[in-house]
Length: 236
Image (tube, rainbow, N blue to C red; front, side):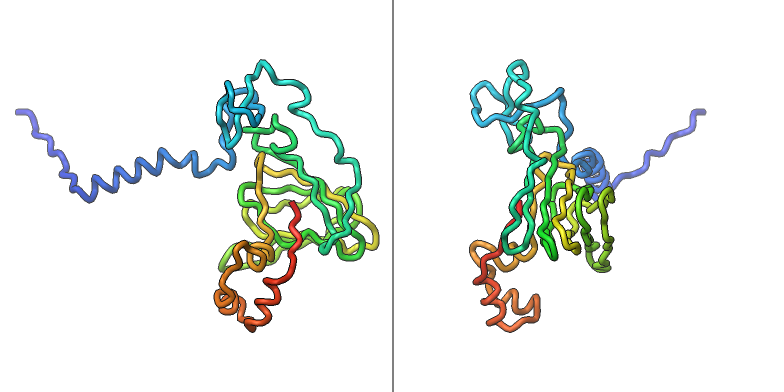
């Protein structure tokens, strides 16, 4: 006699759990991607939507019309004026400067620092990890880990030294030398974005309610209002 096979009973709660698990599994590749991987050789960004495809926030021109200029930028060898409140200037080379970077998930910056304290203020890139190399001068660099450790990791860098700032973490560079400093950095996004901490907190538009900042920073309200009244310099 053939043995009967018992089929396990699946409750509605279990079925919902399996469904959610499957959906999360299907979605996981998107959760790990910084910029979506391209499905073609390139997708040169253009502003004219006529006869174009919208990819990664940009319209793409017909690949047959791509030219060398779409993949080219000149000028990163030129020192930039650092006469500003923080003593540093960032020159970005992202999809806005090189349209051919669209969908390629990478960009570049040059950073010039004034002597004796030129600072690229604490900031974060919401869409990119950064790897920075010093070519001139001496930089004190660092980043802070997330809650609850909030551990500061720092290093003094000299020409030829390299440092990495993980995606989303607050980081900075400070010129501790008596001469100009220059660094180049690559970022893992065609458009990494930047949020300068002090600008976001005290220079938002419209301003954050002072009562929020008084409680968050444990400061006097007049101090908060004074900070909100200042002009906060924003590097790109």
